Length: 103
Length: 282
Image (cartoon, rainbow over the protein chains, first blue to last red):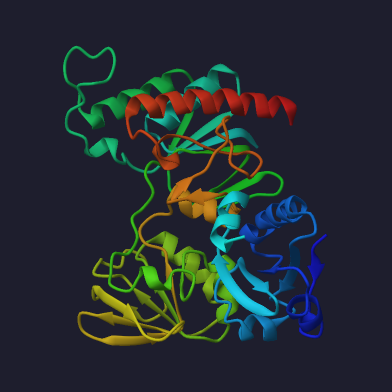
């Protein structure tokens, strides 16, 4: 299950995670974001514990959105071993997302 | 409430509407203009025509055929589509509700072809005010467009910022707008990682973001806002011509593939059959 991440929990949940984390910047009013949610859930299942999905609501977590210069949603960021690896902007199919993220 | 609204009166849309009508569905066809086929002078490779036929003539025949068979056809322009669970379509002249929508609006619009454009997509250039406007609260917003579609986006953007400049990119302004308008052609978009500067023939303008709403909304604009998958600006559909958004179908040139009448009509027929099936199971 994707975990909800806040400014307070970002370090623990994302930067200190033992597995790569896909951070999904989203909002309730963003239709493409809502359609990306099931794609990410399926992706998480496919990777069977080897990838974690973290969700950042840009309405509630303006600081994080700002810090990572999110200028369009949905945007997903991939973190590995506490480091930013890759960024993908926009809604896309699972296979395309996996490819674009380099997973 | 319609069973199906078909957007686009070309070969794909008209064929789908005819099939749906024959399935006794309550169908509305909304068409704006004659699209790509309207600009085609000679058609010689379409089945059954001994003499050459022009695009506009074939189009007119298709629409007249649909009307004769009882399809309700209106000339209007769809500005926005909302879903959940049924679809609400806002047009220039009215509002319509439907259980399903078929996008058959032809080939998707070309982008703004200026230097720097591709570098900023998603990083300061946006195609969707409702998706990204919120991120630019109280920032300098640029908006490219000159028709009702631009006004639609402007209305949304006004909720987020007062500081909005409209760029028509050399086109005439066809609608009244209450924000500053720059009529020059855009030459370049540049600057640092996310901040944009719009360079026109006669000036430079600082903006934090540039929203694109040129001309009329194309199928990909609707798809983007509804959360349908796109690839290379083509709408991605399943075998049954439905997108990943339940009840939203697409056919003809807007899904890519062979850009020919014969394929468009085939798509239209398949989509109509799938819509009929979908409505039965709904």
